[in-house]
Length: 65
Image (tube, rainbow, N blue to C red; front, side, top):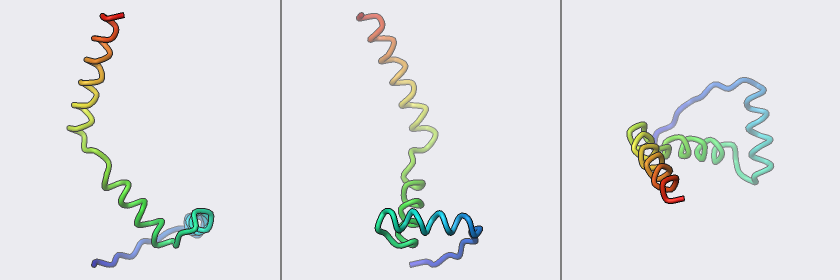
């Protein structure tokens, strides 16, 4: 496992601590969840392909109605 150090402003740390308390998680768990959410975002190619498919479906539905 790799360890990193991140600098946060006092306000950012305060907000993170408050959110952690509200969610019943540790600060470390909250940071890890945020990183995992970001890593899990689809890449640009997937987003472009999904948009083309949605646009094509919208056109088909428009024609069918």
